[in-house]
Length: 258
Length: 242
Image (cartoon, rainbow over all chains, first blue to last red; front, side, top):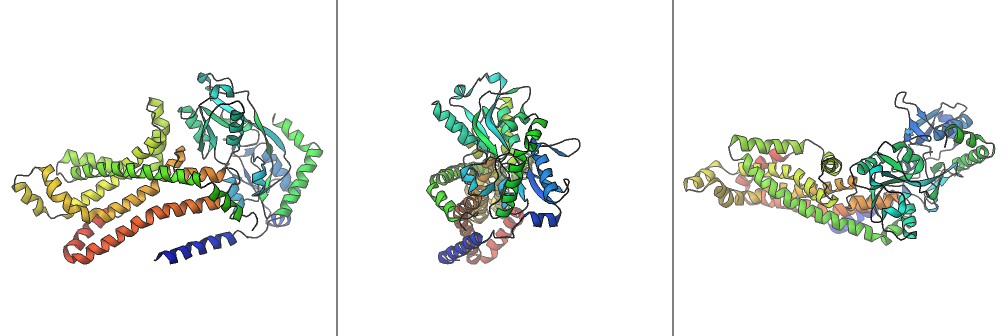
Protein backbone atom coordinates (compact mmCIF):
# COMPACT_ATOMS: atom_id res chain seq x y z
CA UNK A 1 0.00 0.00 0.00
CA UNK A 2 1.46 3.36 -0.96
CA UNK A 3 1.53 6.38 1.31
CA UNK A 4 -1.32 8.29 -0.36
CA UNK A 5 -3.68 5.35 -0.10
CA UNK A 6 -2.76 4.86 3.53
CA UNK A 7 -3.35 8.52 4.31
CA UNK A 8 -6.73 8.39 2.57
CA UNK A 9 -7.66 5.34 4.62
CA UNK A 10 -6.73 7.02 7.87
CA UNK A 11 -8.70 10.15 6.93
CA UNK A 12 -11.75 8.08 6.03
CA UNK A 13 -11.50 6.28 9.35
CA UNK A 14 -11.25 9.53 11.30
CA UNK A 15 -14.23 10.95 9.41
CA UNK A 16 -16.31 7.86 10.10
CA UNK A 17 -15.52 8.16 13.79
CA UNK A 18 -16.38 11.84 13.94
CA UNK A 19 -19.78 11.11 12.39
CA UNK A 20 -20.39 8.14 14.68
CA UNK A 21 -21.73 8.49 18.20
CA UNK A 22 -25.13 9.72 17.02
CA UNK A 23 -26.96 6.74 18.50
CA UNK A 24 -30.51 6.74 19.82
CA UNK A 25 -31.55 9.25 22.46
CA UNK A 26 -32.35 8.02 25.96
CA UNK A 27 -35.01 9.77 28.05
CA UNK A 28 -37.21 8.86 31.01
CA UNK A 29 -39.89 7.46 28.71
CA UNK A 30 -37.47 5.05 27.04
CA UNK A 31 -36.05 4.06 30.44
CA UNK A 32 -39.57 3.46 31.81
CA UNK A 33 -40.31 1.31 28.76
CA UNK A 34 -37.14 -0.77 29.25
CA UNK A 35 -38.09 -1.21 32.94
CA UNK A 36 -34.45 -0.86 34.00
CA UNK A 37 -32.48 2.20 34.98
CA UNK A 38 -28.80 1.58 34.26
CA UNK A 39 -26.64 3.54 36.65
CA UNK A 40 -22.86 3.71 36.96
CA UNK A 41 -21.88 3.80 40.65
CA UNK A 42 -18.75 3.45 42.76
CA UNK A 43 -18.32 0.15 44.59
CA UNK A 44 -15.50 1.18 46.91
CA UNK A 45 -16.57 4.50 48.42
CA UNK A 46 -18.11 4.15 51.90
CA UNK A 47 -21.22 6.28 52.38
CA UNK A 48 -21.62 6.94 48.65
CA UNK A 49 -21.37 3.72 46.69
CA UNK A 50 -20.06 0.64 48.45
CA UNK A 51 -20.60 -2.99 47.57
CA UNK A 52 -21.27 -5.02 50.68
CA UNK A 53 -18.75 -7.84 50.57
CA UNK A 54 -21.02 -10.41 52.25
CA UNK A 55 -24.35 -9.67 50.56
CA UNK A 56 -23.11 -8.25 47.25
CA UNK A 57 -25.65 -5.40 47.57
CA UNK A 58 -24.74 -1.77 46.94
CA UNK A 59 -25.13 0.77 49.75
CA UNK A 60 -24.74 4.52 50.13
CA UNK A 61 -26.18 7.91 49.35
CA UNK A 62 -25.66 7.59 45.61
CA UNK A 63 -27.29 4.16 45.61
CA UNK A 64 -30.34 5.57 47.42
CA UNK A 65 -30.46 8.42 44.91
CA UNK A 66 -30.51 5.95 42.03
CA UNK A 67 -33.34 4.01 43.70
CA UNK A 68 -35.33 7.23 44.21
CA UNK A 69 -34.90 8.07 40.53
CA UNK A 70 -36.03 4.58 39.50
CA UNK A 71 -39.11 4.92 41.72
CA UNK A 72 -39.84 8.27 40.12
CA UNK A 73 -39.57 7.30 36.45
CA UNK A 74 -40.28 3.54 36.47
CA UNK A 75 -42.38 3.30 39.61
CA UNK A 76 -40.18 0.63 41.20
CA UNK A 77 -37.18 1.49 43.33
CA UNK A 78 -35.60 -1.90 42.65
CA UNK A 79 -35.67 -1.48 38.86
CA UNK A 80 -32.05 -0.35 38.91
CA UNK A 81 -29.12 -2.16 37.38
CA UNK A 82 -25.92 -0.99 39.05
CA UNK A 83 -22.70 -1.05 37.12
CA UNK A 84 -19.49 -0.43 39.05
CA UNK A 85 -17.39 2.32 37.47
CA UNK A 86 -14.06 4.00 38.17
CA UNK A 87 -13.03 7.56 37.50
CA UNK A 88 -11.45 6.23 34.33
CA UNK A 89 -14.34 4.15 32.98
CA UNK A 90 -17.42 6.22 33.83
CA UNK A 91 -17.09 8.64 30.92
CA UNK A 92 -16.62 6.06 28.17
CA UNK A 93 -19.41 3.85 29.59
CA UNK A 94 -21.76 6.83 29.43
CA UNK A 95 -20.68 7.66 25.89
CA UNK A 96 -21.17 4.17 24.52
CA UNK A 97 -24.64 3.87 26.06
CA UNK A 98 -23.88 1.04 28.52
CA UNK A 99 -25.29 3.17 31.30
CA UNK A 100 -27.98 5.85 31.34
CA UNK A 101 -26.34 8.01 33.98
CA UNK A 102 -23.41 8.23 36.34
CA UNK A 103 -23.93 8.83 40.06
CA UNK A 104 -20.40 8.12 41.21
CA UNK A 105 -18.72 11.01 43.08
CA UNK A 106 -18.43 12.69 39.67
CA UNK A 107 -17.06 16.20 40.26
CA UNK A 108 -18.57 18.96 38.15
CA UNK A 109 -16.06 21.17 36.30
CA UNK A 110 -16.51 23.75 33.57
CA UNK A 111 -14.40 21.67 31.18
CA UNK A 112 -16.36 18.50 31.85
CA UNK A 113 -19.63 20.32 31.18
CA UNK A 114 -18.52 20.47 27.54
CA UNK A 115 -18.48 16.67 27.50
CA UNK A 116 -21.39 15.64 29.75
CA UNK A 117 -24.54 17.11 31.27
CA UNK A 118 -24.34 17.63 35.03
CA UNK A 119 -27.14 18.35 37.50
CA UNK A 120 -26.96 20.80 40.35
CA UNK A 121 -24.59 19.33 42.97
CA UNK A 122 -26.20 16.98 45.50
CA UNK A 123 -23.10 16.92 47.70
CA UNK A 124 -19.93 18.93 48.13
CA UNK A 125 -16.72 17.21 49.15
CA UNK A 126 -13.08 18.32 49.23
CA UNK A 127 -9.81 16.82 48.00
CA UNK A 128 -7.77 15.31 50.85
CA UNK A 129 -4.36 13.75 51.50
CA UNK A 130 -3.76 10.23 52.84
CA UNK A 131 -0.21 9.55 54.09
CA UNK A 132 1.66 6.88 56.03
CA UNK A 133 1.68 7.58 59.78
CA UNK A 134 5.40 6.81 60.01
CA UNK A 135 6.23 9.61 57.53
CA UNK A 136 5.11 12.14 60.14
CA UNK A 137 3.67 14.68 57.71
CA UNK A 138 1.29 17.21 59.26
CA UNK A 139 0.10 19.12 56.22
CA UNK A 140 0.71 20.15 52.62
CA UNK A 141 3.66 22.38 53.64
CA UNK A 142 5.65 19.24 54.61
CA UNK A 143 5.31 17.78 51.16
CA UNK A 144 7.85 19.86 49.19
CA UNK A 145 9.44 17.66 46.50
CA UNK A 146 7.20 14.69 47.28
CA UNK A 147 5.27 12.53 44.83
CA UNK A 148 1.49 12.55 44.96
CA UNK A 149 -0.41 9.51 43.69
CA UNK A 150 -3.65 10.49 41.98
CA UNK A 151 -6.30 8.71 39.94
CA UNK A 152 -6.50 9.27 36.22
CA UNK A 153 -9.57 11.29 35.34
CA UNK A 154 -9.85 12.72 38.85
CA UNK A 155 -9.68 16.44 39.65
CA UNK A 156 -7.23 16.01 42.53
CA UNK A 157 -4.10 16.75 40.47
CA UNK A 158 -5.25 20.24 39.48
CA UNK A 159 -6.50 20.98 42.99
CA UNK A 160 -3.29 19.97 44.79
CA UNK A 161 -1.08 21.57 42.16
CA UNK A 162 -2.89 24.90 42.62
CA UNK A 163 -2.64 24.67 46.42
CA UNK A 164 1.06 23.76 46.19
CA UNK A 165 1.78 26.67 43.83
CA UNK A 166 0.05 29.01 46.25
CA UNK A 167 2.47 28.17 49.09
CA UNK A 168 5.47 27.84 46.79
CA UNK A 169 6.28 24.13 47.01
CA UNK A 170 7.00 21.79 44.12
CA UNK A 171 5.17 18.50 43.78
CA UNK A 172 5.34 15.69 41.28
CA UNK A 173 2.45 13.46 40.34
CA UNK A 174 2.03 9.83 39.37
CA UNK A 175 -1.31 8.88 37.83
CA UNK A 176 -2.89 5.44 38.18
CA UNK A 177 -5.91 3.77 36.68
CA UNK A 178 -7.61 2.75 39.94
CA UNK A 179 -7.59 3.55 43.67
CA UNK A 180 -6.21 0.16 44.80
CA UNK A 181 -3.18 0.75 42.56
CA UNK A 182 -2.53 4.09 44.28
CA UNK A 183 -2.88 2.47 47.71
CA UNK A 184 -0.38 -0.24 46.66
CA UNK A 185 2.01 2.48 45.46
CA UNK A 186 1.62 4.31 48.80
CA UNK A 187 2.30 1.11 50.75
CA UNK A 188 5.40 0.25 48.71
CA UNK A 189 6.74 3.79 49.08
CA UNK A 190 6.40 4.65 45.38
CA UNK A 191 4.31 7.69 46.23
CA UNK A 192 4.33 9.71 49.46
CA UNK A 193 0.71 10.74 49.34
CA UNK A 194 -2.55 9.24 48.09
CA UNK A 195 -4.77 12.10 47.07
CA UNK A 196 -8.39 12.02 46.01
CA UNK A 197 -11.71 13.28 47.39
CA UNK A 198 -11.89 12.80 51.17
CA UNK A 199 -15.00 10.62 50.97
CA UNK A 200 -13.10 8.18 48.77
CA UNK A 201 -9.97 8.30 50.95
CA UNK A 202 -11.96 7.21 54.00
CA UNK A 203 -12.42 3.83 52.30
CA UNK A 204 -8.64 3.31 52.23
CA UNK A 205 -7.81 4.43 55.75
CA UNK A 206 -6.09 1.72 57.81
CA UNK A 207 -3.87 1.34 60.90
CA UNK A 208 -0.75 2.51 59.09
CA UNK A 209 -2.18 5.60 57.42
CA UNK A 210 -3.81 8.88 58.33
CA UNK A 211 -5.85 11.54 56.47
CA UNK A 212 -4.29 14.98 56.90
CA UNK A 213 -6.59 17.86 57.97
CA UNK A 214 -6.01 19.76 54.69
CA UNK A 215 -8.99 20.26 52.40
CA UNK A 216 -8.63 21.53 48.84
CA UNK A 217 -10.96 23.03 46.26
CA UNK A 218 -14.54 22.01 46.95
CA UNK A 219 -15.66 19.11 44.80
CA UNK A 220 -19.29 19.34 43.71
CA UNK A 221 -20.81 15.98 42.87
CA UNK A 222 -23.50 15.95 40.17
CA UNK A 223 -25.42 13.32 38.24
CA UNK A 224 -23.92 13.05 34.77
CA UNK A 225 -25.77 12.13 31.60
CA UNK A 226 -24.65 11.83 28.01
CA UNK A 227 -24.43 15.23 26.38
CA UNK A 228 -27.03 14.53 23.70
CA UNK A 229 -29.60 13.30 26.25
CA UNK A 230 -30.67 16.82 27.18
CA UNK A 231 -34.25 15.86 28.06
CA UNK A 232 -33.04 13.25 30.56
CA UNK A 233 -30.61 15.80 31.99
CA UNK A 234 -33.48 18.26 32.47
CA UNK A 235 -35.56 15.63 34.28
CA UNK A 236 -32.65 14.73 36.59
CA UNK A 237 -32.05 18.41 37.28
CA UNK A 238 -35.71 18.86 38.27
CA UNK A 239 -35.56 15.84 40.60
CA UNK A 240 -32.35 16.91 42.33
CA UNK A 241 -33.61 20.48 42.76
CA UNK A 242 -36.84 19.11 44.25
CA UNK A 243 -35.02 16.76 46.66
CA UNK A 244 -32.60 19.48 47.72
CA UNK A 245 -35.57 21.72 48.50
CA UNK A 246 -37.72 19.22 50.40
CA UNK A 247 -34.94 17.83 52.59
CA UNK A 248 -34.75 14.39 50.95
CA UNK A 249 -31.04 14.73 50.20
CA UNK A 250 -30.29 16.30 53.60
CA UNK A 251 -31.92 13.25 55.20
CA UNK A 252 -29.69 10.92 53.14
CA UNK A 253 -26.59 12.89 54.10
CA UNK A 254 -27.35 12.46 57.79
CA UNK A 255 -28.38 8.82 57.27
CA UNK A 256 -24.86 8.03 56.06
CA UNK A 257 -23.09 10.42 58.49
CA UNK A 258 -21.49 12.38 55.65
CA UNK B 1 -20.84 17.99 16.23
CA UNK B 2 -20.01 20.98 18.48
CA UNK B 3 -18.93 19.00 21.53
CA UNK B 4 -19.14 15.29 20.73
CA UNK B 5 -16.39 12.85 21.71
CA UNK B 6 -14.52 13.66 18.48
CA UNK B 7 -15.40 17.36 18.26
CA UNK B 8 -13.01 19.72 16.50
CA UNK B 9 -12.00 21.63 19.64
CA UNK B 10 -10.70 18.41 21.20
CA UNK B 11 -8.34 17.88 18.26
CA UNK B 12 -7.21 21.50 18.47
CA UNK B 13 -6.47 21.13 22.19
CA UNK B 14 -4.60 17.92 21.47
CA UNK B 15 -2.38 19.47 18.82
CA UNK B 16 -1.65 22.50 20.99
CA UNK B 17 -0.56 20.08 23.75
CA UNK B 18 1.61 18.08 21.33
CA UNK B 19 4.59 18.30 23.69
CA UNK B 20 2.92 15.88 26.10
CA UNK B 21 2.79 13.27 23.35
CA UNK B 22 6.27 14.11 22.03
CA UNK B 23 7.81 13.59 25.47
CA UNK B 24 5.99 10.28 25.85
CA UNK B 25 7.15 9.19 22.40
CA UNK B 26 10.73 10.04 23.39
CA UNK B 27 10.56 7.88 26.52
CA UNK B 28 8.95 5.03 24.59
CA UNK B 29 11.70 5.16 21.95
CA UNK B 30 14.61 5.22 24.40
CA UNK B 31 13.11 2.42 26.52
CA UNK B 32 12.43 0.37 23.39
CA UNK B 33 16.01 0.72 22.09
CA UNK B 34 17.63 -0.14 25.44
CA UNK B 35 15.20 -2.98 26.13
CA UNK B 36 15.86 -4.36 22.65
CA UNK B 37 19.63 -4.36 23.28
CA UNK B 38 19.08 -6.19 26.57
CA UNK B 39 16.72 -8.66 24.91
CA UNK B 40 19.27 -9.38 22.15
CA UNK B 41 22.02 -9.94 24.69
CA UNK B 42 19.90 -12.32 26.75
CA UNK B 43 18.46 -13.97 23.66
CA UNK B 44 21.81 -14.77 22.05
CA UNK B 45 23.24 -16.08 25.33
CA UNK B 46 20.23 -18.28 26.07
CA UNK B 47 19.89 -19.39 22.46
CA UNK B 48 23.47 -20.65 22.59
CA UNK B 49 22.81 -22.41 25.90
CA UNK B 50 19.78 -24.16 24.40
CA UNK B 51 21.83 -25.46 21.46
CA UNK B 52 24.86 -26.43 23.53
CA UNK B 53 23.76 -30.03 24.02
CA UNK B 54 24.70 -29.77 27.72
CA UNK B 55 21.61 -30.79 29.70
CA UNK B 56 21.89 -28.50 32.79
CA UNK B 57 22.58 -25.45 30.56
CA UNK B 58 19.65 -26.33 28.32
CA UNK B 59 17.47 -26.66 31.42
CA UNK B 60 18.41 -23.17 32.62
CA UNK B 61 17.49 -21.68 29.26
CA UNK B 62 14.25 -23.70 29.14
CA UNK B 63 13.11 -22.56 32.59
CA UNK B 64 13.87 -18.93 31.78
CA UNK B 65 12.04 -19.01 28.47
CA UNK B 66 8.99 -20.83 29.83
CA UNK B 67 8.77 -18.54 32.87
CA UNK B 68 8.78 -15.34 30.87
CA UNK B 69 6.64 -16.62 28.01
CA UNK B 70 3.93 -17.92 30.31
CA UNK B 71 3.42 -15.05 32.74
CA UNK B 72 1.85 -11.72 31.77
CA UNK B 73 4.19 -8.78 31.29
CA UNK B 74 1.91 -6.58 33.41
CA UNK B 75 2.34 -8.85 36.44
CA UNK B 76 6.12 -8.69 36.03
CA UNK B 77 5.93 -4.89 35.87
CA UNK B 78 3.70 -4.68 38.97
CA UNK B 79 5.94 -7.12 40.83
CA UNK B 80 9.08 -5.08 40.29
CA UNK B 81 7.21 -1.82 40.95
CA UNK B 82 5.27 -2.72 44.10
CA UNK B 83 6.69 -5.94 45.54
CA UNK B 84 10.46 -5.44 45.23
CA UNK B 85 10.43 -2.16 47.25
CA UNK B 86 9.08 -4.15 50.22
CA UNK B 87 12.39 -6.02 50.28
CA UNK B 88 14.42 -2.88 49.75
CA UNK B 89 14.88 -2.89 45.96
CA UNK B 90 13.57 0.38 44.56
CA UNK B 91 14.06 0.86 40.82
CA UNK B 92 12.79 3.95 39.03
CA UNK B 93 10.10 3.43 36.40
CA UNK B 94 12.46 4.02 33.48
CA UNK B 95 14.81 1.25 34.64
CA UNK B 96 11.83 -1.00 35.30
CA UNK B 97 10.70 -0.48 31.72
CA UNK B 98 14.09 -1.34 30.22
CA UNK B 99 14.72 -4.26 32.58
CA UNK B 100 11.34 -5.99 32.60
CA UNK B 101 10.60 -5.53 28.90
CA UNK B 102 14.16 -6.54 28.03
CA UNK B 103 13.97 -9.69 30.18
CA UNK B 104 10.54 -10.57 28.81
CA UNK B 105 11.49 -10.24 25.15
CA UNK B 106 14.84 -11.88 25.84
CA UNK B 107 12.86 -15.11 26.21
CA UNK B 108 11.29 -14.71 22.77
CA UNK B 109 14.57 -13.69 21.14
CA UNK B 110 16.17 -16.79 22.71
CA UNK B 111 13.69 -18.99 20.90
CA UNK B 112 14.37 -17.20 17.61
CA UNK B 113 18.13 -17.60 18.05
CA UNK B 114 17.79 -21.26 19.03
CA UNK B 115 15.70 -21.95 15.94
CA UNK B 116 18.20 -20.07 13.80
CA UNK B 117 21.12 -22.13 15.10
CA UNK B 118 19.18 -25.37 14.58
CA UNK B 119 18.41 -24.39 10.98
CA UNK B 120 22.12 -24.51 10.09
CA UNK B 121 23.09 -28.04 8.96
CA UNK B 122 24.93 -30.08 11.61
CA UNK B 123 27.85 -30.64 9.21
CA UNK B 124 28.87 -27.01 9.72
CA UNK B 125 29.40 -27.53 13.43
CA UNK B 126 31.13 -30.87 12.92
CA UNK B 127 33.46 -29.38 10.33
CA UNK B 128 34.52 -26.44 12.47
CA UNK B 129 34.92 -28.54 15.60
CA UNK B 130 37.15 -30.92 13.63
CA UNK B 131 39.28 -27.91 12.71
CA UNK B 132 39.90 -27.27 16.42
CA UNK B 133 37.34 -24.49 17.03
CA UNK B 134 35.87 -24.41 20.52
CA UNK B 135 32.05 -24.33 20.91
CA UNK B 136 32.10 -20.54 21.44
CA UNK B 137 34.38 -20.02 18.43
CA UNK B 138 32.20 -22.24 16.29
CA UNK B 139 29.19 -20.14 17.23
CA UNK B 140 30.99 -16.83 16.89
CA UNK B 141 32.73 -17.40 13.53
CA UNK B 142 30.74 -20.08 11.75
CA UNK B 143 27.15 -20.58 12.94
CA UNK B 144 25.84 -17.22 14.18
CA UNK B 145 26.95 -15.21 11.11
CA UNK B 146 24.99 -17.63 8.95
CA UNK B 147 21.89 -17.43 11.14
CA UNK B 148 21.70 -13.65 11.11
CA UNK B 149 19.98 -13.28 7.76
CA UNK B 150 17.64 -16.13 8.46
CA UNK B 151 16.53 -14.81 11.87
CA UNK B 152 16.37 -11.16 10.89
CA UNK B 153 12.66 -11.24 9.89
CA UNK B 154 11.44 -12.92 13.12
CA UNK B 155 13.77 -10.71 15.17
CA UNK B 156 12.29 -7.62 13.56
CA UNK B 157 8.82 -8.86 14.43
CA UNK B 158 10.02 -9.22 18.02
CA UNK B 159 11.20 -5.60 17.92
CA UNK B 160 7.72 -4.57 16.77
CA UNK B 161 6.12 -6.49 19.65
CA UNK B 162 8.62 -4.98 22.04
CA UNK B 163 7.75 -1.44 20.97
CA UNK B 164 4.06 -2.14 21.50
CA UNK B 165 4.72 -3.80 24.85
CA UNK B 166 6.48 -0.72 26.24
CA UNK B 167 2.91 0.47 26.82
CA UNK B 168 2.82 -1.89 29.83
CA UNK B 169 4.80 0.84 31.62
CA UNK B 170 1.64 2.96 31.64
CA UNK B 171 0.18 0.92 34.51
CA UNK B 172 2.93 2.13 36.84
CA UNK B 173 2.95 5.77 35.69
CA UNK B 174 5.93 5.05 33.44
CA UNK B 175 5.96 8.33 31.54
CA UNK B 176 5.82 6.52 28.18
CA UNK B 177 3.60 7.42 25.23
CA UNK B 178 0.62 5.37 26.43
CA UNK B 179 0.82 6.87 29.93
CA UNK B 180 1.06 10.43 28.66
CA UNK B 181 -1.85 9.90 26.29
CA UNK B 182 -3.99 8.41 29.07
CA UNK B 183 -3.01 11.18 31.42
CA UNK B 184 -3.78 13.86 28.84
CA UNK B 185 -7.10 12.26 27.92
CA UNK B 186 -8.32 11.86 31.48
CA UNK B 187 -7.63 15.43 32.57
CA UNK B 188 -9.62 18.49 31.60
CA UNK B 189 -11.97 17.87 28.70
CA UNK B 190 -11.93 14.05 28.87
CA UNK B 191 -11.04 13.70 25.16
CA UNK B 192 -10.29 9.97 25.09
CA UNK B 193 -11.11 9.34 21.44
CA UNK B 194 -8.67 11.77 19.79
CA UNK B 195 -5.92 10.90 22.30
CA UNK B 196 -6.08 7.18 21.61
CA UNK B 197 -6.32 7.66 17.84
CA UNK B 198 -3.25 9.91 17.70
CA UNK B 199 -1.35 7.58 20.02
CA UNK B 200 -2.33 4.58 17.93
CA UNK B 201 -1.11 6.33 14.79
CA UNK B 202 2.22 7.13 16.48
CA UNK B 203 2.76 3.49 17.49
CA UNK B 204 1.75 2.47 13.99
CA UNK B 205 4.29 4.82 12.44
CA UNK B 206 7.00 3.25 14.62
CA UNK B 207 6.01 -0.35 13.97
CA UNK B 208 4.72 -0.46 10.40
CA UNK B 209 8.07 0.32 8.68
CA UNK B 210 9.78 -2.39 10.75
CA UNK B 211 7.09 -4.94 10.00
CA UNK B 212 7.20 -4.09 6.28
CA UNK B 213 10.96 -4.42 6.27
CA UNK B 214 10.70 -7.86 7.85
CA UNK B 215 8.15 -9.01 5.29
CA UNK B 216 10.08 -7.68 2.28
CA UNK B 217 13.40 -9.03 3.53
CA UNK B 218 11.87 -12.44 4.00
CA UNK B 219 10.43 -12.41 0.48
CA UNK B 220 13.81 -11.41 -0.90
CA UNK B 221 15.50 -14.26 0.95
CA UNK B 222 13.02 -16.77 -0.39
CA UNK B 223 13.37 -15.63 -4.00
CA UNK B 224 17.16 -15.53 -3.92
CA UNK B 225 18.01 -18.97 -2.70
CA UNK B 226 14.82 -20.87 -3.01
CA UNK B 227 15.62 -24.36 -1.91
CA UNK B 228 17.89 -24.06 1.08
CA UNK B 229 16.64 -20.76 2.52
CA UNK B 230 13.00 -21.76 2.31
CA UNK B 231 13.79 -24.92 4.22
CA UNK B 232 15.71 -22.96 6.86
CA UNK B 233 12.96 -20.36 7.15
CA UNK B 234 10.42 -23.10 7.63
CA UNK B 235 12.40 -24.42 10.59
CA UNK B 236 12.62 -20.97 12.17
CA UNK B 237 8.98 -20.12 11.59
CA UNK B 238 7.80 -23.40 13.01
CA UNK B 239 9.52 -22.64 16.30
CA UNK B 240 8.65 -18.97 16.44
CA UNK B 241 4.94 -19.17 15.63
CA UNK B 242 3.08 -18.29 18.81
